[in-house]
Image: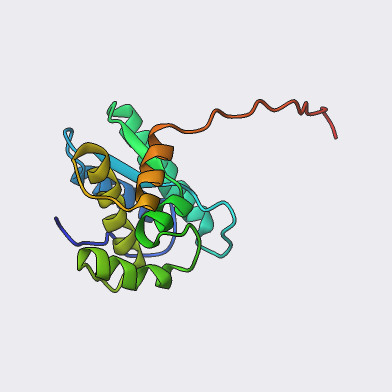
Length: 156
């Protein structure tokens, strides 16, 4: 497993976003099993817009290639790594090291490592904790979406 973090040079603009997306998609092989962390809808900060742009562009790229992927909610990623679905990125460091012996200074690479463990658990027989089993079950059997009855009124 490669331990890399794709970063682009330059300002946060369309060219940099394209660079990150193209470099990421080039690493994904047609036979790869892919997991993507879902968006953190409560996040704030100057980079949130770029995160959405990169995330959607990668999803679109996979769709165009007809490559399936699973989406793992941030709370599911944390629960799979720590046993609980909340906490800071730093709260994952010790549990990841204790469970898998993996460490890296970048929280992005640590998240990617946990995503790899999730996809591995879906496709290979591995020993899982009860919280990990719950995460896998919920990914494979997502609850039905509730229909919305809200109608938007034009002009309001």
